[in-house]
Image (cartoon, rainbow over all chains, first blue to last red; front, side, top):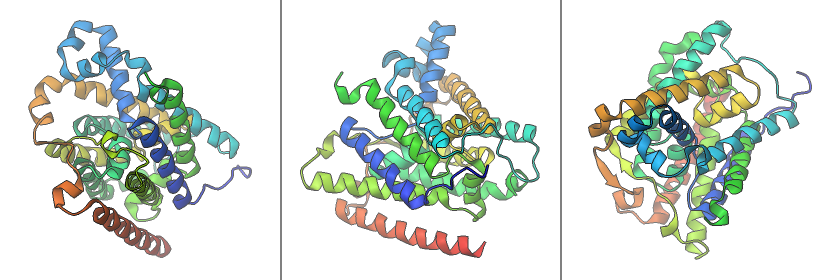
Length: 170
Length: 182
């Protein structure tokens, strides 16, 4: 643990992230994303298990019709995110098997909370057509109205829910 | 398919994305959740620095004629589902302490809570997708196309960009004050 290097300044990391986003815009015409990879994975699963049902469902069909969901652009991008995150953690001596949890929360309870939180975010990301990456970050930089509405709604709900979730984190 | 749309480019851009998120500490749910208790504003600082950097880059590259702004993707606005989606997402964000991108970084840096969030996300997207026939009317409601803030307000592009830079600087100053207090 003593070998783990401290994190970069959030402003330095933010400008770096902004430059990555800018390169994505210039090279590909689109920004970054994350929840789209989950949408492709879900569409691929439904398409494999119940192809007739997937074809009837407008949401899954839209991803399946765009090509093979397992080799979609955003799926490769997310595999890159995991690789880049792992490389960064290893280089900084921060790679370690562990469960981050609040001081009053057991590790099993934390895993339940993380799974539940992921599910709830999944619902929100489908409705919003994106998450903090595709909407807030990428759409935000392109000044899309819906992206800014999403971002403001995320923080409003986050601050409203936080007092009820104190046990998780404080 | 052009080289820039190719999968190695997607992987490389993603790798740079994941690397910067981890460098900023955004794989740590305790750090992210601090945002909602006014203790650690890393999320806000990283997000707004990134938005301002990319926004200024796009604006100036467009102004200098080095990129075609019309060729850049602007997400379409569906106001009601995006506001409701954002409210739902915000609750999940507090519960998980991670968002979709950062949950991947958390999982990739060895964190079990990151992996659990990734699994929950897949399940949530899957179930909501299965419910699409029921919610489709709402999902496609309040469509405004690729509407931007300059179009909405009637203000010139450069004025909106400058206003967001000023708002970001004010947010940073407020975050620094609140962090010093806690």
